[in-house]
Length: 363
Image (cartoon, rainbow, N blue to C red):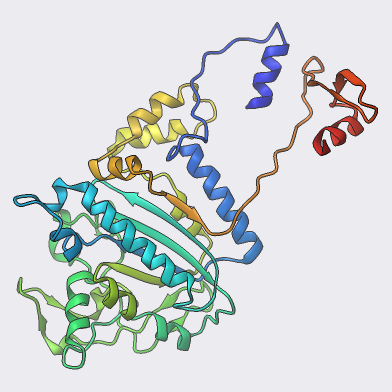
């Protein structure tokens, strides 16, 4: 795009087109997310794909939030308190992961989202050095069953409150997880019962151990009968420590990075059209398309006002920009600088003079 702009400047016969572009310097914009995604993919190409995918969601009933609310206020009315507490909890989680909870960390990415429901949540990708992807290792890290209430009542209560999926088959259209077009749960719940954890040899997908416990007749307070087929995979240590929805799963495909950095928009058909316009190179008004797509709630706005990080990459990526030779011979770049004898050179043509370009970069 920059080269095209230069050619239009130097070419008096070029057609002038009015356009409104969004630069990658706009934090949270589509090009900004694309830039972060490319950096993450570069890290993945160098080190290999991540091993764990973790989703950490804010719990509005944390005592740190409840005890900080003024009298008569709910957590939805004080987004500043919610995000301050969540930010501290998230940093604590990142510290635990980087200090070897699951093994020595090789790299870590995370992205924070605040959707219309108002609660912030973070997606985390973690690669561990010398990680062995086998059923024994997976069973030590990830559980997909309800813990025994007789042996660990505290963990049982936390898991029941935070790690059970909705019964979409009963709720159907009333559930936010129900896929109307496919007439089933969008997250494919309930899951099939599995006696032992196994890894699909073709797809590499992990099927976690979910033993059939339907005969135990576990009944919740709302008279809902549950079993292991509705349990969202979790790590007992993290679940017990944070008392929140914290989904932990094995990564089986490289698309996890794309999911982490994709531009989230969920606002009906109109916005879907505008998203396509936003990523269309022929679109001349990216600003209007972005404004129509953008949806900012109070929690999202407060997070950005406090300037908390939206995306983090623990590996530094240095971007090397390349000067592409212009198609138009009139589009030349001329620079003035001193040569080795401190003589001032006027109009050094760096397009053809390689020595001049190298000298310029080393001065």
